Image: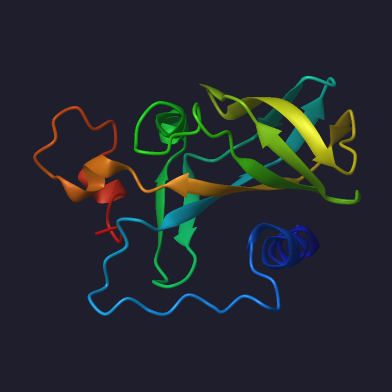
Length: 175
C-alpha cells in the first residue's frame, strides 16, 4: 500500500494542484485565515469495485484524513460517515460543483474521476463516478482515493451553529 500512497501523492501534486510553472504560489495569509481555502480528503480501503457507473470502496476505516493546500497547511481527520456533508453544505458544495478525485488501485495505473454523489454504508463508500482520465479496474485490492477541492464546512467557523453535521472536534485545525 506504500506504493499506492506515494503514487497518490505524485498524482496530487502533478494533476490536482491546479498550479503550473507560470503561476505564482499562493502567498501565506498574514492572519492564518483559511475560510476560503479548500481541503483534500483521503480515503483508504481494502478493496474496490467499479461497474462502469458506481465505484464502491470497501474496508474503509472509521475516519478519513483531510488536509489543506497552500497558503495555510493544516491536517486533521473526520468521521467517514460525515463525507456526505460535503455534497449538501457549504458555500461551494459538491452537489453544485462535483469534485475530481485521484483513484489509485494497487497494481493499476491511477485514474482521475468525478464523483457526483456519495453513499456511506457500514465500512464502505459508494460514488456515482465519471472517469475523466485513465481506466478503473472492475475489481481491485487496496485503494487510495484523494478527493480534491472540498470547501471547508462553513459551520466550522461558527461553533454556535446547531445545524452543523460535523462535531467540533472534526473542525479542529480549520479555523
